[in-house]
Length: 610
Image (cartoon, rainbow, N blue to C red; front, side, top):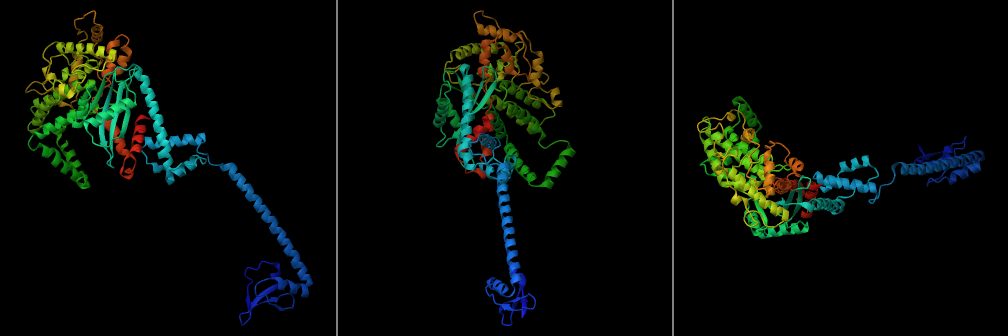
C-alpha cells in the first residue's frame, strides 16, 4: 500500500488517521494510535466512521478530538464576527472619507458643469472631450464628489443654456447703449463649412455713449437655400427685427464685392452700402498683375511651384536659406518693397479696438506716395517699376474721388489725428456742409441719409485725392500717386534708403500742419461754430486714442461728437467678420464634420461674445 495525503482534510480527527491506497487503488484510513493500525473505510471522505472508531476503541482520544474541534469552532466564529465588524467599520469610514457624489442639482456641481461648458466653447473643444479618460481622471483628483455629465448633456442642455444666457447679456448691453445711439453698422458675409452647411454672419458695431467702440457677433445662423440678394436681405431684416434694433437711425452695411451682396444692399434703400477696403485692395493688386504679360504666371504658377518644392524638401529649404544669407536678401525683394505698404495698410485697417474708416483716405494717400517713390527711384527698373505704375493706376480706378466720398471724408475729418490735413479749403467746406446734414439726420433719427436719397454705395461714388489741393496753404495737393516732398521726377527720396512706412508722408505733413485754419463763421450755425473750435487745435498725432479725445471734448463739441460717434463706429474692412468665420472653421474640423449646424452657431456665438 502507498501513503496518500489527506488532501483538504481540516477536521482534528484526521490527526489520528492516515489515508493509504491499496494495490487495487482502494482508499482506506489506518488508525495511527499506538499499535491499533485498524483500517477504517471512508470512501466518501466523511469523518463519521472515524469518530465511531475513536469512540469505541480510543475513548480518551475521542474526548480530546471533540474538545479540540469545539475550541476551533468557537475561535473561527469569533474571527468571523471580528472580520464582519471590521468590514462594517470600513464601509462606514469610506462613506465618511469619500462622501457620496453630488447630484446634478447641487450648487457646486452646477458651477463646475457650467465652467466646463464655457471651456468647451472658449477653447473650441469637441463635446466628447468630457468623456475622455484624462479629463475624468483630472476631475476625480480635483473634486471626487463631482460626477462628469455625458457629452449629450453638454450638447443638449449646458451649452444651449449658456448660449441663451450670453445672448441675453449681450442684448441687455446693446439695449442699454441704444437708448441714445446716433447710428450703427453691420458687417455681413457668407460661409460654407466642411460639411457643406451654409451660414450667414452679421457683426454689429457702434460707439457707446461712453465713447467705447463695441462690436458683437450678432448672428451666425444656418442659411439654407439659394444665396440671392433677396434672401440675404430677408435674413438681414429678420436679424434687425429679432434683436429689436431701431430703424429710425442710419444703418451702415459693410460687405465684400460679391454680386449677391451688392444686390442685397441695392434692394434696401434705407441702408448705407459700403464695400470692404481689403477686398477692394486685393482686387486692385489682381487687376495690376493680370495686365502685365507673364506676371500672373510668375506670381501664381511659378511661385506656387517654388513654394511647393521647398515645402516638401528639407535639404532644398536649407540650401535656400543659405543662399539668401549669402546674398543678404530674399527672392523677389523688389516685389516685396512694392507690396509691403499694401500689407501694412490691410493689417492696420483691420483692427478691432479702434476706428478704422477714418484711416482709409490717409492709407490710400500713403500707398500712392510709396508707389511714386518706387517709380522715381532710378535704381528701380524693369518689371518692378511696371507693376508699381499699374498698381498706382488701378488704385485710382478702384478708389475714384475718395476725398469727396461720404462717409469716408467726414469720418477722416472728425478723426483728431488727421482733421483737415488731406483736404483743401474747398474740400473742407464741402465736408463741413455734409456735417450740417449729418447733424440734422442724427438728431432727428431720420431714415434717409446724406447723398443718394438715403442710399450711398461708396464703391460707386468714392473720389480720389488727385483732384484735391493741399490742406495747409491752398496750393495744389499731391495726388495719391504723385510725388510728395523730396520725391520729384528723377529724384530719389531719402525715405528709400531705409524701410519705408505707409505713414511716412503723414508724419511729415503733421509737422507742418497749422493749428488756426478756420472757415468763415456764420454765428447762427452751431455746427460750424463747433468746427471752428475743433480746428483751433492742431491734430493730436498718430497712435493717439481717438475715442478718448472725443470723450474728453464731447461737452464742448456736442454736435460733432455725436456725428463722430456715428461715423467712427463704421469699420473699414470685414476682417473682424472673417475672424468670426475662422472661429466656426476651427470648430468644424475634420473630426467634427457631423456637428449640427445649430451647435456650430451656438459655440461660435459663445466663443466670440463670452
